[in-house]
Image (cartoon, rainbow, N blue to C red; front, side):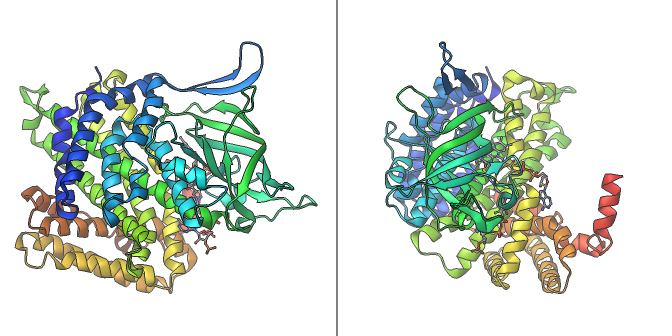
Length: 566
Ligand code: UCC
Ligand code: FAD
């Protein structure tokens, strides 16, 4: 039996920080009873399905027995059950039903947090489905996407649709503006036919997709770059003979992880589609999807960390080495507590962006909240994605050789965490997104960041145990404020080299403020205070440290290139 199947008691303890957070912010019994019931279901039933998805990966049947092209993607029964469960449990719809007003996203994502590591990666299609619904809600729920919206956000499993997000082409997935070759040919009825090659399409068993393409005029000309990209809605359907309409599935990708779900290369050969953005506003229009999918990514990252910490903790109480249990080896316990601290920081970062998203959707967000949401979405995605890989790897090692053995389920958790820093924007690409969002906002985004971080720290002023943490935070904040004031005078090379460290600094300082804020709450536990203190002992502002070291000085780009390519 995979180790990840013995979950019931572990889920109970894993809920401690989640429970504290929810008791503080949504003290509503129906939230608790739903989450507890769902947690039990995940532990006792769904986790087994997740394992089945891993051991019975999807397969592509391109031709039927009579040589007819069918391009069927066969998925496991467990994968199909995940779809039904997702609809019934409202894993997407809660975000649109909004039963708890601005806290509904926190509630929805708390369910996904429990579900994610057992979901057999079904959280991937759910992320894109939620993202597509968000795009439709933002452009207007009317024809041709009205029914799609209703299906994406339903609780009826036989009516529920999932969506794809086809942005990546052979020429590149980060640089979408230059990488997109797909063209959209206008039809007389106002629709378009798409022709192109989509290089990565995940959860390709989806019912519909949002995708980017360039409109081709009557002379066959297109507009290059970002300004030529528009956003299209297309349904994935079959004709009477069972053949996909306008799509050929070229192959399923042979991937390091995420093997539970199909990721295909698709040839679009006259796929009927509808333009749903203004012409040339494709990237800006799909940005809402990116916000939502990046938040889902962050939830999955925090959840993977939580799962592995719980399993490692449990193993430490059972496994003996050198005559005593692992839990009695101080160095092993130091390793586990470092994992726990990272996990807590990630959890609070994630919940805070869910809080901000909820406020934005209920119309209660201040201008400051909107700036924070825009800034923190890439920051939290890139930080938690990277930390998930480190924490899950450490967790796997905490099982010694058993961590490396397939039937424990741990290698799958490790493989699946590696994708979290690649898709939905790599670490560097998101660091540059942070830089762009800061530089385009004339200081407003950073003003929001500093103001809110200081508000979070204010609550700790009377809590003496937290004083060392607050002091470290104030030093880090001052350094960061000085550095960003100075940044306006720096050349673009300096800023580009500093981008990743800047994003990390924003993440660490903000997580520190959230941990301190949570530890100052009257219902907080001693562990909450300990986590805040320990978090703030690390270098909270690596961008200032590396600036002082001269790492971004004018010679650095050529030095780095000469060294790396030598
Ligand atoms: O990878 C994928 C995986 C699917 C599976 C999902 C699973 C999720 C979690 C599951 C958990 C288990 S789908 C593909 C994802 N692809 C990316 O993430 C692309 C990465 N590249 C970028 O993010 C780049 O920064 C681009 C593509 C956005 C850059 O495009 P441009 O056109 O060169 O950049 P611009 O000029 O900065 O942006 C154009 C417009 C601007 O608006 P205007 O024109 O009004 O000034 C930007 O402000 O788009 C706006 N914009 C944004 N707005 C760009 N990015 C954003 C943003 N993040 N938020 C708001
Ligand atoms: P590249 O852009 O070639 O990047 C290569 C390296 O260069 C990266 O380390 C990157 O950080 C770095 N880099 C790039 N530009 C810069 C820069 N300006 N400065 C510094 N460093 C830079 N895409 C979809 O559209 N839909 C999907 O459903 C989908 N599913 C996926 C599923 C899986 C399992 C995987 C692995 C990918 C999937 N993708 C999907 C594609 C994914 O979004 C892209 O792979 C990702 O965005 C990176 O793009 P790329 O592969 O072209 O890498």
